[in-house]
Amino acid sequence: MMSNKVLYFEGIDDILINFMTTPDTPTSAPVYDKEIYRLPIATKLGVKGNGSVLEKWASSKLFRRVGRQTKHELSLDHVGMPIEILDKMNDLIATKGVVFNTSKAKELPYFAFGFVGRIEGGERMAVWYPKVQLSNTVDSEYTTAEEETEIKDVSAAFVAVGLLYNDVINSAFDSTRESANLITLEKFITTPIFEEAQLEEVPPTGKLKEDKKNG
Image (cartoon, rainbow, N blue to C red; front, side, top):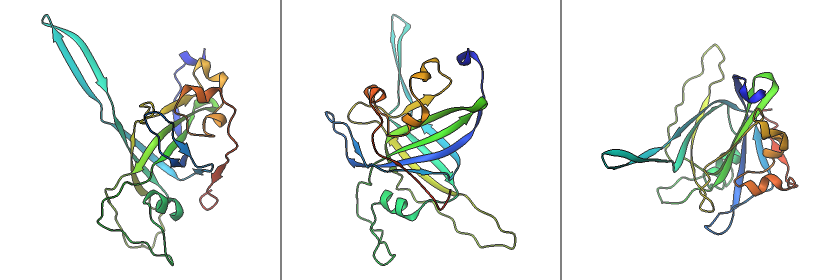
């Protein structure tokens, strides 16, 4: 059976970005833009959780050990991202090609972030983070061009948090699971998945917007 076979991860494929148009609340789900940006730009993706554990002792024995995560820090190395997407992430509007960053406090826009990966034997996996913001920590470096041409990676940092609606931080699809024959990768990446009810719905009419410049 496929689920009992150890398969290796071949590599990260495209990343997915879908901007949130209506934020979630404790009683209502988030609403996203109809267009999803699918970008073939990723070279490396790091995920770091903030897991914590609470231990409760009783009668001189460990009674409960409860773990919790409230956010994931995502670090993306990539070959370049369209400026229109970066401006949206930073909530910036350009005037004659110029944007202005200020020291005023503001809440950056939320968006869904996803990625697709390849697994041995033609299998696929994908992950959606439904509520993500660009990290406001700036860490940029500019170097001179040299005689030998080199395409340098660019770094971006994001913070993914749980939805107010249902506490979901991410959802993950893996085609090697036995029950994966009930859904396809294509359906999973058609819209940000954050609750089980979505798996029963007909895929929405929204289309994936692929980056032609980097594709």
